[in-house]
Image 1 (cartoon, rainbow, N blue to C red):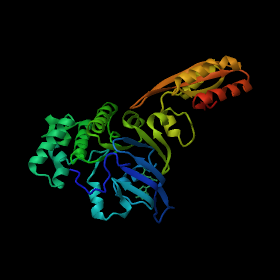
Image 2: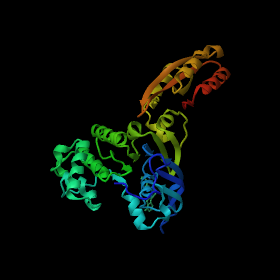
Image 3: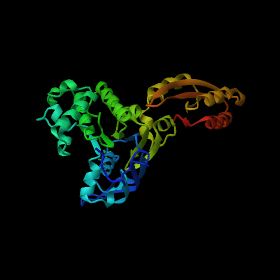
Image 4: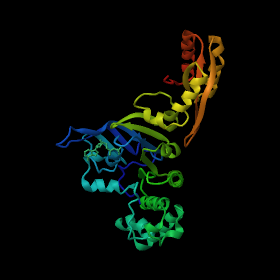
Length: 353
Ligand code: ADP
């Protein structure tokens, strides 16, 4: 279906989406201007799943609307599928938009149309014949596991099934990019898994590039290759999911990642640890576990004793990693010196006392 000009990006032709210094400022008479997206730069490559995570109000919706051209940047440039959106006419913009599928939090299905008609709707708009539509809809319903629901109406479906219809519809016209906007936020945890597995299959089996915006760590953890953490309009951290999540660097800005990790001691754990251990508490990333364990093995050389007081694992799409919290006992200066060695082995985060 992608029959567009040779100027369009193709697999291997570089990034599918590129933001360069993009700012989108809203001004209204009542309040001071708000930069919903503030000097943001990133690229999304062909075939990857790029996650954007942040609290409500961080600027995620504005970012997604900048990708599909529903918002224009106040400054900076947005390039999608090889086209600089800022310079495009409305009709060229529509052309780019046709190659982007959208999945919505509230599904946005037509309640008066059955499942097959919902999935076939974008194909009607795109001028596919009835026979072509029928074949494609069958194929899509098979892919999302709803072949037996073609004649059902949305109200007869569970939330997870509705979202699977939403995904089938988004994939119908064989887009190059799928934008998933809080695609699992209206679902309960058990159905969330079913929808995330489907998105992952769409990426792996159909090769579609996905940008998923979410406030749920689970989404990033299970489908994303790379993640950008947004806060107050800015990207405050970006990288491979594994690297961002396994990093124990902690700042106010990265609090989002930190607060969502389950493998650090909670306040209650800390109270329990404090009642039995007196040492200085630090959390170590086990990304380079051999190096970390070798460094722990040398504690005695510094006159420092350590006790493992907490540990846990995190699993991401591509890998698992652990964090270990240890209590270090010894002369303050010796512990300080030993911490230098630990820092050589990997990121170390001081646990606030
Ligand atoms: P998120 O999707 O992460 O919740 P949004 O992109 O919706 O964040 O919003 C980011 C900030 O921009 C918020 O402070 C919001 O109030 C503001 N904002 C978003 N859209 C508009 C608009 N059309 N007019 C004025 N302010 C807006």
